[in-house]
Length: 491
Ligand SMILES: Cc1ncc(COP(=O)(O)O)c(C=O)c1O
Image (cartoon, rainbow, N blue to C red):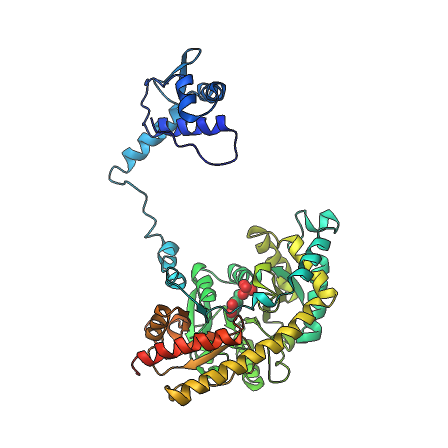
């Protein structure tokens, strides 16, 4: 008899009982069959006889076994009724089904596309897809100290069920920071598990079947998938050199209407373009005219290299129609899972309620630690340090691209970004074909095809994130990528 004991931390007798119960349920031990003696089982399993007997007592009490003498047991002639009936009914109702089929279920089908993970089994040495910060630059000892001190906060603040809005000290720190750095005032902050959850919460509140969201035809893929998950109709609009095409946006709102406009105006994802002030004003007026709210995703404003970053749309929002989302994932580190929303008064309560039924709150300890780090100045010192490093890395990246142009690939083109953690390179080749070839050489990059809302659009651009790589890593990665580009025919 083969008994496979579960390997969890429960007492051995419970795990033996579990293994025997499973064997009976699967009919490997049929009704009325006799079990080996407790002594034999004890020898087989390498345990004491009393441990086996404790397991048997458990199963007798549950009705799976009958005890004959003190240590001889048989499987009950009718094991617990409900379980048997349940198994038989399941077979009767679905006689031809061996295993339940998940594949056709709506979202399972959409989400079974392995796109993010397609190169997971390949040996990857350079990841230009990693849009996050360089984790090697985080002052870990400083943050560990802050975490330790956060743990000394009043228990109710960090260890209990906290308020859905966030830990009060962090709410205050973010409010002050936003007012100083992004000229945002008069809004309510809600701390979220990254800006991903912030956007999910807005989608759950405002979107759903029968609703429509408008977004640029190129976008950050997970955001598109959040909207798909809520079964919202997604309407893409084209872009020009300044970002979202206002004429196309106006036409959609006039003819079809919409319930939300999603934008990344400061450093557009994936093209990195900054939307100029006049264009923002125009988009705002169109949204106001048709009464459609804007969700502004300001995900990496701390990293702007040509002067101060433009103020967000939320800082000049006389009608209160902009919902602002941002994150500490780029400025601090993504593992903290701290992002936030800054919302008009009317949305505070509804979003806190959405919050309650999704993840309730962000980890209190992490929130408190982030608040201490911000209030003591550590966070901004860190940003100032890494901003210089990332700017150097961008300069280095541009120099490497220039070198590639001068040697083998004169057709490469790019517009130097004003900020952010990535560049948008025109390879003049099928973007996905380049990415596939690059992956075979150990280099990951996002293709324009991957970022496109229209599957038929292959595009010729790559989004290449540079912040998480040191200069020598960038050089080596770009050399390999250059070979992959050169091996791909021009379109
Ligand atoms: C445009 C954009 N929005 C949102 C996010 C989500 O960031 P997080 O959930 O880590 O805050 C990202 C992450 O890369 C992003 O690029």
